[in-house]
Length: 154
Image 1: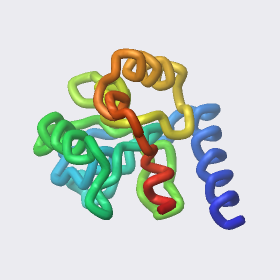
Image 2: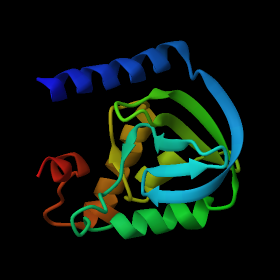
Image 3: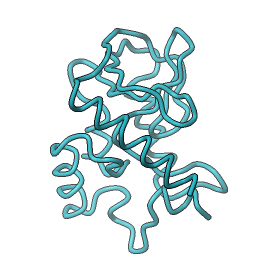
Image 4: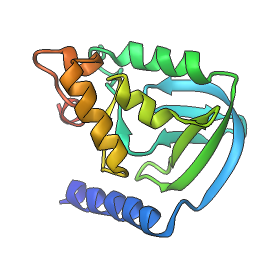
């Protein structure tokens, strides 16, 4: 029941963000890449990339977890990014879309097959996921792919 309520809360946060638009935009430097969907910026804030779910590094890690993290590290570490904040998740992390050089990095993760759509924020995200699936990119190249959500439940 708690998981259900948490999912409803997260959905409402995303929906309110979509309806009202992002709360805040600002520029920061990425000082750490935690995994394929989380970074830390120079003010110490942990950013959870909104609308995506990358493979987990926990318990030995899922396939493509390191590739997803490495891509983000190469793309973002020590670089200036624009952060569009949507709210907080249940772990009190800031949910945001991350832009670097004008590109939506959250969307890039999906396009390259390094993340799947989590709580559809954008039709573009779902369309990018479909293209990556059809092309067999990244996680979609696996015969028995397990979503990060299912992996965490184990």
